[in-house]
Length: 301
Ligand code: SF4
Ligand code: SF4
Image 1 (cartoon, rainbow, N blue to C red):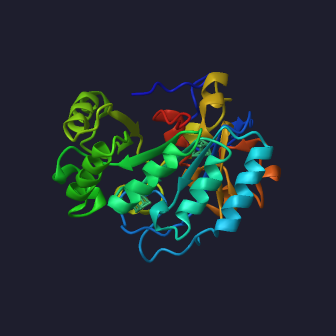
Image 2: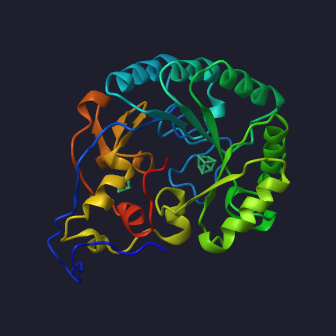
């Protein structure tokens, strides 16, 4: 549970909103939405409405990804994330992995369902030929099929477990990412998840909990946010501001640059055509920002 950390108590009722500003500090994380909204599944809690038929944000070409990486390097990026959708659907995945790993550590955020033996072997090979780290973040939203499949779809639990065992046999140690949907409470679940992942053969289990963002498809499930006034009236404490993902990162898609990966479907969060012109201060104009500030979404590294 994160404490509400405003300088003063936010107002209630109808107010003239003066939403907090976040200054851009430096380019720590460059998120590249390599497959747009294209995904092999359609999770009920997906905060971007991704799915097999979701084409609202098209896939990026390998050339677009490479150009973005070059811009990121010029701007001093420290690490790269490939997101989607599902990055393992990208037809030139190996090429763009190599392009990223020539410049910086890379993390691929995946649902894990396409990681067959060949994909795992490819990841192993690429991680052995680079001086930077190549990390996987694999989503698993419960330690039982009932918990996980409720939001990710029937049968996904067993398939992700197969992937985690396969990665464990290959000596790879992915970060298991758990979204805090109902029934998943961080404090109670951490030990349970650590042991669960260890039992799958991952020698050094790493588990990361993410708060539930109530936009995208998740908005239809839990009816979104209700009170933007919670963000109004007071500047953020410096330590809160500096730890927000949008203070040290940007999300690049085939349709431009966005404040962060959570808002790539919000036209108003599009803050530039290209990275070099997108590193300016922003105002937290989106109800989704409540989750970052109130539920503890800090830099997702
Ligand atoms: S949450 Fe991830 S795996 Fe699920 S539909 Fe969205 S992008 Fe795909
Ligand atoms: S959702 Fe979070 S990371 Fe994105 S702009 Fe709002 S506060 Fe920043």
